[in-house]
Image (cartoon, rainbow, N blue to C red; front, side):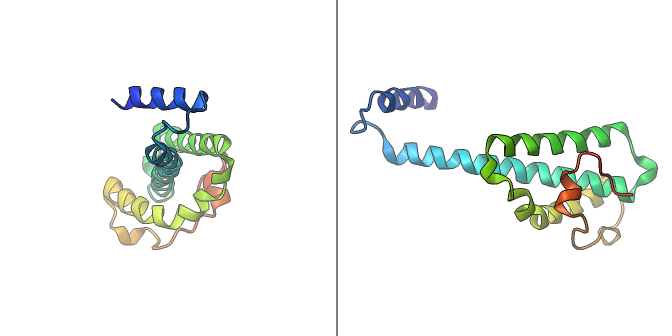
Amino acid sequence: DFARWSAEQAVLLRAGRLDRVDTENVAEEIESLGRSEQSEIESRMAVLLAHLLKHQFQPAQRSASWTATIFEQRYRIARVIRRSPSLKFYPAATRDEEYVIARRNAAAETGHPISVFPETCSYTIEQILDEDWLPE
């Protein structure tokens, strides 16, 4: 029962009962929280990049839904960074890797051959995260 174990560990930590704390597992859980926030940024970057590609390469199909998704992904990435400022540079670090996924997803979702989309991301991280920027 993870919820009960977490509550018990919190009680022990607050009481200063470090001799009773499951230190190895507590440390592992704390590390996983950081990885979770990184994973969230990665996932949101892939969705954001795919929608930017669709916006650019399928202009006749642009919709309010795509624009809303672009805004939401940017907003949620920014929120993770506000909560964990040490991840400020993580979107830039993961851009190229997530672009590989985004490119394939954009091709699948638009029906365009993958060769329509550039092999490398031409958007700067500033453009990607700029709430007012859209590729034309």
